[in-house]
Image (cartoon, rainbow, N blue to C red):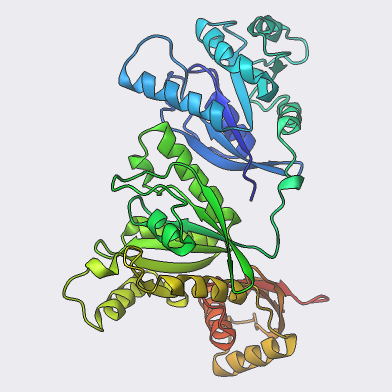
Amino acid sequence: MSELTVAIVGRPNVGKSTLFNRIVGGRRAIVDDRPGVTRDRNFAVANWNGREFWLIDTGGWDTSGGDALSTAIRHQIEAAIDESDAIVLVVDSKVGVHPADLEVAELLRPHKDRVLLVANKVDDLPDDTSAFVFFELGLGEPLAVSAATGKASGDLLDALVAKLPDEASAAPDDETIQVAVVGRPNVGKSSLMNRLLGAERSVVAPEAGTTRDAVDSPLRYHGQTLNFIDTAGLRRRSKVEDEIEFYSSLRTRRAIDRADVCVLVVDASAGMNAQDLKIARMAWDAGAGLIVAVNKWDLVEDKDTSTAIEGQRAVEERVPFLKAVPFLYESAKTGLRVRKVLDLIVEVAAARDFRAPTSEVNRVLTELINRNQPPQKPGQEVKLFFASQIGTKPPTIAVVSNRPNVVSESYRRFLQHGFRAAFGFKGSPIRLKMRRKKGR
């Protein structure tokens, strides 16, 4: 997943959200004729000609007042300018140059090399010359488009990806295990990192949300390099009230996307709540290995040998995929079982990279079919012929069938569980692909 970021900025009601929806290919942002509808940041992954990037839709730059909402939106636009690899300034060709356009242009002029000026609502292309007036902004030649109809959107994307930096030089070392330390704010992520690394690599404070950026810290352990990414805490979107926390949330999602293993840190005294489970699902769906580190275990009172087992079982009943995930009950403050985190990271990374021999995969498939035949529909006999592991990171197994589209979701889960029981794949998701036998 790319870490490149593109921000769309401009005054209210110039079509920023319409352009956002056009680029990402769906109605992800709310579109309304009333100005100021977009107040929070909305982001999604976009792709053009093989270049992938995060696209951010921001609120409208408002010159009218100094109320709290206008001030917050101005701050988030300023943050977007600081954070983004490229910036799309959208202006309205039907209105012409507006005082707010001049203000935003002044803010962007020092970053001119990263800015793409887009004159929106130019419907009569190529004859309409209304975009030329925006040369006044001093940001180069305006690109005329119609976000509503899609006219010139391909030219826009060509120009946009041309402004993105080359990622080739930043390719990660395949031998390094990328580890994202994730979780809600103030659960002890930085404290755990500091304990593991043996140094004060991350700022630790009692206030929630101290860590604002994602910080990489490499560590050699048993002959392998583990690169730890300490991220800001993920809150529910309704709780992300300022621009700094919005970008912290975005960085966390990006860290998950590039991680081999995610260590989800949970506060033992609070237990796993809905947001913890959402982060776990996000990591699992991204194909990362997952470890749940239940921190502050030393502060849990009246615990006995069954406390952890009962709590873990209750969580697994709510979210079945967590049965495949190792739980570790530790204390970053006292050092209790912290070293075990490193052992689990290496173990989960190895399981995610394990490739089972084809003969063994087929042996397991035969056993599973003998134990439980795939459900059959009248006149639609389903046969499973053979299987092989076609990929790793995460493990991916292809099962060849005469009718792959008929195989039910419940039976696919049965196969996944069977392969996991045979090969382990500890802490790693398994991708199952049903394929049709050639010639059938």
